[in-house]
Image (cartoon, rainbow, N blue to C red):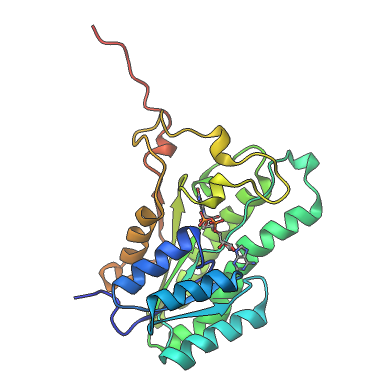
Length: 259
Ligand SMILES: NC(=O)c1ccc[n+]([C@@H]2O[C@H](COP(=O)([O-])OP(=O)(O)OC[C@H]3O[C@@H](n4cnc5c(N)ncnc54)[C@H](O)[C@@H]3O)[C@@H](O)[C@H]2O)c1
């Protein structure tokens, strides 16, 4: 039986990249899906393709009133909201801290951190009205260490970990679970296209060859983990963090010469 029959899921940044994979995966498991995003054309096309159990709603995660409208849309169209996926994210153009202007710092933190905060703030009462549910925040393996030239991104994603744990404590008694996923390098425009203001893309300087699973991650890899964490199969899991990186954080799989 599909795991999300009669459940409604809101995915931010749902019009492309990992977000649209998550939308399709939830929909395939029976969910009503609310596709939140900035790109109305792609969002409407995806909703049309999926049919009656899908809606696009314009959602800028940095804007609280936009969040209120999206959550209200989920409740008015489908009756309740059960799952929130805070997936929207942006990367900074690579730069040393001393060369990072405050506007860039604020822009990245606004989307990646404030967007996640606002999402949980606005969705929590709706999840409570639904008698419980799940939030999954998408952070990054960059939230587990330092990465030169990515200070705003790293700092924002680290902070999402603290937010997740705090929300898990605040919402657990209401049967709302909150967890974090840390993707490694996943094949989306995020790595294939330069960040706003940058000239090169992550894929220009990253190769999966030396790592334990020598391929890029695919969005569906992350979607499968997400489905599990958002489902009742994970009912005892909250405040937790899941790395999905093909062994990237293990470091290179050095091959010793053998006789
Ligand atoms: N691709 C990777 O290698 C990778 C690795 C680790 C973490 N992540 C994280 O995964 C998430 C999804 O990224 P992706 O790989 O699909 O990249 P992507 O660039 O394809 O998707 C990001 C999405 O966020 C949306 N977005 C940006 N600002 C927004 C805003 N203000 N309001 C609403 N939506 C907004 C974009 O329109 C886009 O749809 C992000 O949080 C990213 O930080 C990606």
